[in-house]
Length: 502
Image (cartoon, rainbow, N blue to C red):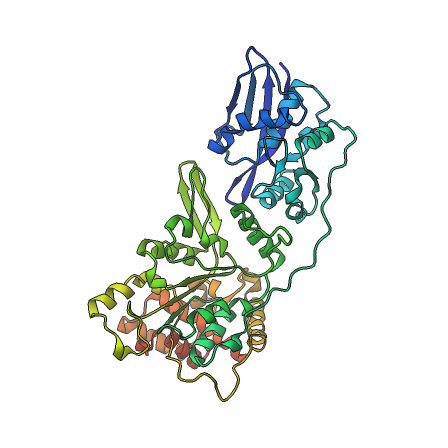
């Protein structure tokens, strides 16, 4: 029986597995059967692909067609297999040289008229294809800029199925190559000088940027909590090339890349609405889960405005991701793991009525406790810096506030110090250093940690909280230009968490 095969790619999270697409033509009747654990979108290809073949001026096999996607036990999802299914079917029915077909990675969804539409996950698919030995890929023209980010693999773009089949037959046709790179857009950075007053909160934001720490801003409405959070991105360093590819791969799977500038070079800023579901926050979907807000904020900032308005289950879903830097989502077709190492920034009022002055509060003690109680103890224990905002008292200050450029210079200097110190261990920021290493290999003298021991003995600080205080102390030392944290740095770190521990 005539048979042909092509290659495509299945994604599990941001990791790819090569999929062999086989087409067998023979037997009576024009039935089409697909095997290999396809999802609903892929099963619909048995109607979509034949129509695209016929409307492209090609002939669909008149006999029974069996389509097999291997590995058979691996769930397949999405429409990115359309191009490979169509090419393998045409090749099996009308035999032509298959050298190009069997050595080229094919990705693309087919329209009924034969146009090749863009699909999600082209970047991680091509990275996995390169690692699997592929050195050529045929993708939709709309995905060429994204595909061109992968070095070492020849990328060709086709507009229609007819063009792709003509090229696979080694007949004259001009496919598009990667377009020239465009100059990056200089995105406007919100200036920290816009925030009037709030010296403690500004200092906490600088410390958070220098050490990649989590922050909670508490206070009346209109005091600048959200303004400060949005200005954190301007203080952070640009992503390294490895980090850029990792973040871009996640956003590619989520379908959120910019067509003109697909490579993400700046830390992402993700701010989900407080009505977001757990699936929107963590990731979800039938079959294999897609990335949620937690993963899209990888290497960047996850900002929860009005944090106490989020559902308790939604907030508790952050705990493991904050601690481990990844999220594991179990669904029907398996467990998907996405990286999720982000800075958590939360902003909240103190109570539901949110008065400017505490004396104007009309909430009962039970209402205040129920409102603020949505932020559980285990979640708050993972927040390094807790800042109480003060009501605004003037529109102008005697001295103009420092700009983002001035503060960013100090932050980058402190970050450089931390990277140099931890480089042999693979940690990029103080917040990533494991607690046991801080207590053993980089233990501080007893005179410096006396306040920590006292807080632990009084039961107002947990072991996790003590580790986070040590990380903050190292960041404060880096900002001061010191070699190791002093007693004053440890005391300041404790005060950032809660003044009651002193």
